[in-house]
Image (cartoon, rainbow, N blue to C red):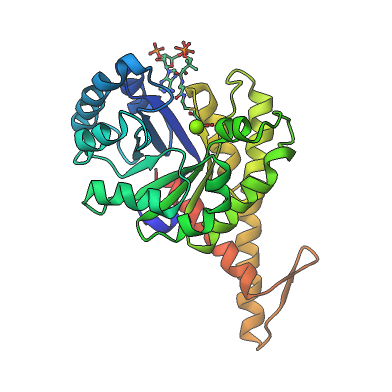
Amino acid sequence: MDSTVRPYRSVLYIPGSKERALDKARGLPVDAIIFDLEDAVTPDAKIEARDTLRDALAQGGYGARARIIRINGMDTEWGKGDVEALKDADCDAFLLPKVNSAADVQALADLLGNGKPIWAMIETPLGVLNALEIAAHPQLSGFVAGTNDLAKELNCRFRADRLPMMTALQQMLLAARAYGVIAIDGVYNQFKDEDGLRAECEQGRDLGFDGKTLIHPAQVDVTNECFSPSEAEIDLARRQIEAFEEVERTGQGVAVVDGKIVENLHVETAKKILAMASSIASL
Ligand SMILES: CC(C)(COP(=O)(O)OP(=O)(O)OC[C@H]1O[C@@H](n2cnc3c(N)ncnc32)[C@H](O)[C@@H]1OP(=O)(O)O)[C@@H](O)C(=O)NCCC(=O)NCCSC(=O)C[C@H](O)C(=O)O
Ligand SMILES: [Mg+2]
């Protein structure tokens, strides 16, 4: 799959210690999986989870889904051991929690020593403030918002409009876009509340996120729907491209579709929408 249009709509956390969930994920229509060794695994299960996860990855069966391993932080008693145990595992990236600076990313890169892509959880005040230097690290390819840790650190309240964390989310997005880094929104904790999830997905999509992290299989369909180009967007994109090509033939640089101007930059967006739709259709 073309990595520039690879979908990351639904990114499901799976506790690395739970064999049943690790198996179930092989049949779920998610675009990516975060195999978690951090918060989803209790301290007494952390060492064993490394073997459980390595075996599951070796067994395979995850198809085209991107496979990302979230290790424990380097400042914990498990971080380095996680890397030692899993650096050669069959996965696409490593996700480092509570990243505060580019130096944190470099420390993981040194330990991995194999050039594997690194993703960063942006979930601390320093991580948000240093998002630009983190995104600029050459091995960094994805950001994941850690909205639970962020709320804890900011001492803010959870609100449906997420106003208290909007600055952080947008700073993270700006840094991601400045360096071509994938940006995934945080989790929606009330996993049985479909309407609430849909509203938060729509907000995340409006903001510019590529997708959302999830904690339960029941959240997958809504999320895929919200982060896929809609039929209306696909239809408009096609008409914009056609209209622009038509005016170009007559030597002009601006078309009008549905009462709105269409310039070259809109055509670029339209082409991206069609490429993403085709990439999703090919899954
Ligand atoms: C939230 C849960 C604890 C709920 O678990 P459970 O009560 O077992 O759910 P169900 O009985 O409804 O499960 C139905 C079946 O689905 C499977 N399942 C459940 N969750 C997952 C999953 N995440 N991936 C794959 N499969 C899953 C069950 O095994 C059942 O299967 P079956 O028996 O075959 O029918 C649980 O969903 C859970 O543990 N979720 C993950 C929690 C997690 O990962 N937390 C850490 C990430 S969030 C975070 O840290 C964010 C960030 O750092 C921040 O700061 O914000
Ligand atoms: Mg967190």
